[in-house]
Amino acid sequence: MRGMRPVAAQGDLFERRIQERWTERRGRRLDVLIAGCGWPDPLKLEMESRVVGIDEDHPVVRANTSARGDLTSWALGDLRSVPVPPRAFDVVYAPFLLERLEHPELVLDRLLGGLRPNGLLLLRMRDRESAYGTCARLTPWPLRRLLWPKLVPAGTPGPLPKVYGPAISREGIRAYCLTRGLVVTDEFLGTSSPAADRPLVRAACSVIEAVSRGRIPASHDEITMIIRKPEDYFTRVL
Image 1 (cartoon, rainbow, N blue to C red):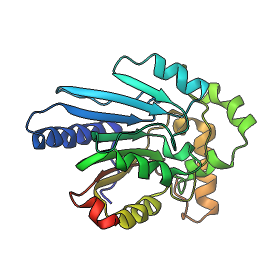
Image 2 (cartoon, one colour; image 1 turned 90 degrees about the vertical axis):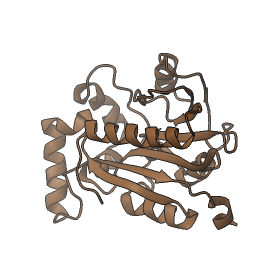
Image 3 (tube, rainbow, N blue to C red; image 1 turned 120 degrees about the horizontal axis):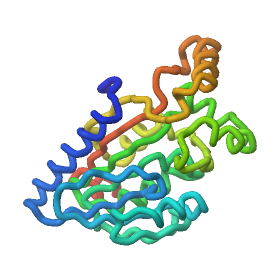
Image 4 (cartoon, one colour; image 1 turned 60 degrees about the vertical axis):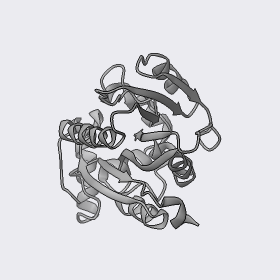
């Protein structure tokens, strides 16, 4: 684990890794897939690029995707069946998507199929093993919907469904990568949810940390990972 980093530093690291991938492509166009394009978190791409978006078909997601101007094209639907062309992308970026899916491993498999060899998978997700993640997955949907406008700035998408399956943790993603022959090049923790800084949420997270005797930490809410798909990925799977 690389430790705690501010969100700005995470963005800088994404930019460096994307630049390195573009250099590997010898200046050819970079093809990027944003899986979770309903979350308004575009990548900074200072090179020729084609950006395609996919996401679940949800009213909030639909509204935010329609407002984006950085996408060449996009499609919404069940991410287990939305078309992802094989070996079509150099970078796949999934911001805050996996925690709201019923079967994240199946979706990750499809996203990896769309990555070219040596391509990058950039993940940002809430950690189900954090105090914040525990609050989010245990809070009933009606209460989440009631509290949402009071806890986040206006215009923040949500509330979106929260599933937080067992894989949505540092160890869960590491285990997934191990079974798929993937390489985790960077990983770190951070705090980025606008709700996490509210006194009510901070107090609830502190109680959860204290009751769990530190096993469920309140020090972060987000896991960021950069994962590389090796050249011989398909050989390893077979």
